[in-house]
Image (cartoon, rainbow, N blue to C red; front, side, top):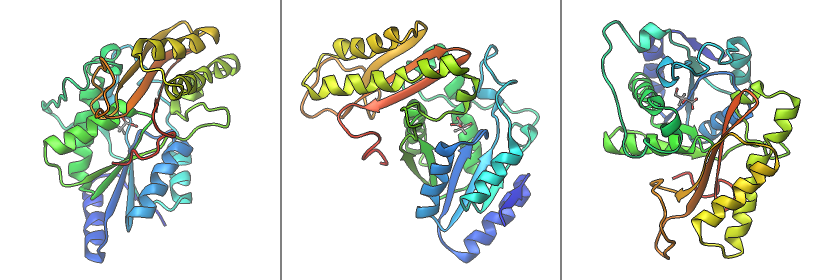
Length: 293
Ligand code: PAF
């Protein structure tokens, strides 16, 4: 039976019983509205850890004033069934007041990593992610935490945060799960109607086109970005927030490719129908391969 932990006391008791039994605690933080991408995180945790706990918390501080916090899909019963179905041991579902008690004042900023890309069009978003993930880590105290590589900038932010603050845990990135036509799974795909859903496949096709150009020897960042943008534009996606090729570890701008540099990752964010969608691909590798650092 999966344990339902609604407050930090219950969570602490569960954690203590795991510690007594021994073995690593694996943690998968989520905002619910779970799909196969989240379940892949649980499965990765299941493979690597004796105990697996997920959290479901729609974090208000990572949504901007005009973003979708109030309409973000909330499906707690279905989520619990899905988690139990893939062998998750416990789910922590705190109230807002437990994460952000009266008088909460602390901020976490990881810069310059979060100033650009999604950070540019979603000011404050990554500060909210940094603070909630820190609080959740302090409550759960996991040995290993699992994050999807689809949220690539978030994944790099968390790696940086954990390294900089010497948090005693390991961060694992899990490859993106895609639909058969390549669309990366996302809770926000629920916002796509039939026609927008078809257009949304252009993200993956754009990334593949850029990878193909990379493999054919193209090394000009602007050309690689143009190749992907063309695919988006041909599909009728006009609201392109960014298409950028960056250094995969640091997300730094690449001025020219050298032998010694890290792999290049292409990242993109677009608006399709009512949804803001993101995707990415390391151009020099198979999808997601070798990135669980
Ligand atoms: O990726 C998410 O679902 C969220 O940003 C996270 C990491 C659970 C923090 O709220």
